[in-house]
Amino acid sequence: MPKTMRAALLDTAGAPEALRIGEIAYPDRVNAEFIVKVVASSVNPIDAKTRAGRGVFSAIHSFPVVLGHDFSGVVVESPYSAHPLRPGDEVFGMVMVPRLGGSYAEYIAVPSLSVVRKPATLSHIEAAAAPLAALTAWGMVVDVAKAHDGQRMLIHAGSGGVGHFAVQFASYFGAHVIATASGSKASWLRSLGAAEVVDYRTTRFEDVVHDVDVVIDLLGNVHDNTGSRSLASLRPGGLIVNAPTGSWPTFAEDTAAAGVRGTDYKVAPDGNTLGVIARLLESGNVRVHVDQIFELEQIADAHRAIESGHTRGKIALKVAEG
Ligand SMILES: NC(=O)c1ccc[n+]([C@@H]2O[C@H](COP(=O)([O-])OP(=O)(O)OC[C@H]3O[C@@H](n4cnc5c(N)ncnc54)[C@H](OP(=O)(O)O)[C@@H]3O)[C@@H](O)[C@H]2O)c1
Image (cartoon, rainbow, N blue to C red; front, side, top):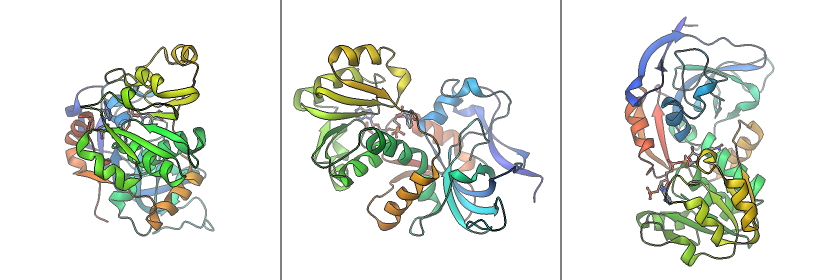
């Protein structure tokens, strides 16, 4: 095993340029953990928020830190010799940063419950683009909102990393999906299963969308009070599930006053659910869309891209050949 590995490192909070490429120690494997050689990672908004000193930054107690929740790669060490995932197997999954070192690195140590066999039909780049965003979408749309036949579901930012999975899961389970996005993405979103697309640049969605059972809110009040305005689109007693939880401090009071149910949502690594998602990806029932691919050395550019807030699907990172 090498003694050190290449990684994108963060020494202190800052702008994208604060990320630098350097060498750190090869990870230690303990108990039921794998060592995975990372071929690809992906960039999520939480990475950029954390790098800037928000997100999970307050939980980082030693620097330099390695960010990056998603990985796809090859098993180097298994937890025990009879484990069904063997050295050389292709796997993907999600790690919880900063509790563990992140995937902007050549190797990671990761608990076995977070590691899943990579869908054979996906490249490492495609597989690495899926875990955090797809698990978030599944948690909000399937676990919390119980997507089902005939349910009317409004999904904000349907064209983003989480949103494009949310649209597909909701429509797979029979919901009538109304997505907000800019108009240029409407036909693509229809191809993913949206029944209606509202162009947020030209139309106030609350003027044309009424009596939905569920709002999947991936914007909160980050932009144009999208979260608060959504309360007018819900039927009485409907449900709003909010992911950018920090953007709407009066969420609980506002939903109660409007006579609807509201909950925030927090994603976690979950190999069982990711295994189900892997089967949907492998069969082609669900697709992952990679908008841009950056090399690990271009990590600052990848962060600038995610911070633009206008990604279609996901931004992936190539860490190694594979
Ligand atoms: N709590 C959790 O566990 C959790 C997990 C994952 C993500 N999140 C949070 O959820 C949010 C979404 O994450 P993501 O990865 O999906 O982000 P993303 O990929 O960066 O989302 C980008 C998309 O948002 C669309 N968009 C921007 N402004 C919009 C508006 N006003 N109306 C409708 N669509 C708009 C953009 O469409 P256009 O290009 O057409 O403008 C773009 O396609 C982030 O704040 C993230 O931190 C939370």
